[in-house]
Image (cartoon, rainbow, N blue to C red; front, side, top):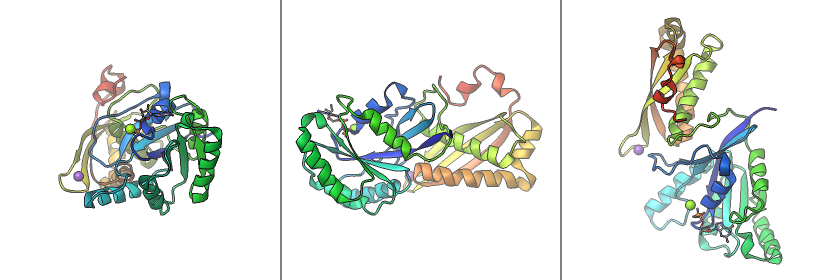
Length: 296
Ligand code: GDP
Ligand code: MG
Ligand code: K
């Protein structure tokens, strides 16, 4: 069976239980939870991993009723993000009737083509009859591919939730190595994207003797632009030549393909600078992994 991986945006009003749910779903399988403020509008919250899949949960700020112009702008940016992930999970609180905030989110979701799952959380606070009514009401909205009642607190129906989420993930690579812990998930993803493009462009000529070290990720003040510089380490001079290609053509192609994917990941324009350096037997050095930004 082929590996599946993708990105999920969990949205909903404050206090409906988004964090509790993500933490419970990811549980002991947590690879990464980042609470550091990041420069871009998308923030990787946590990564769920098992033997057949990897699900990257993205935090999408700004999905609430806009109070002013800035709020409206945030809301627009958030909706754009929702069009770029593989699945949108809208979470509501079972004990509250659909408030203005929810209807606003539902309205803006109608324009989003990404598959949508509605999660009704806190079902421990209502009766079966009330739940049936609630499911009916949300079903009538007509935009949800699935409706899943859960209790994040009581760990009720979480297995079902992750199974459904996995069903919507496309075939994809394992973005994060097993057992790796990092507080810089974006850095790791970016280096993996670049590595993948190098392998695509060089076919079997440069097998696995490469590593990508992200030297800088910096958001340019006042602009929707992130400057990224990375060094590609290879083991031999001949490999360096292959990666760069005739007149630098191959490196240019690698850079373009990587940049386009990184722009999708970060949700902003990217200026990507790549350098190629030879570092013999980097794999044998005991601190090589650590020096490339990984903490094990
Ligand atoms: P977020 O703002 O959407 O991330 O919500 P949180 O995860 O921070 O949860 C808000 C509050 O709801 C916390 O006090 C949680 O303990 C509580 N909560 C979360 N899930 C459930 C649930 O399934 N049942 C009940 N009764 N409370 C829950
Ligand atoms: Mg939260
Ligand atoms: K910026």
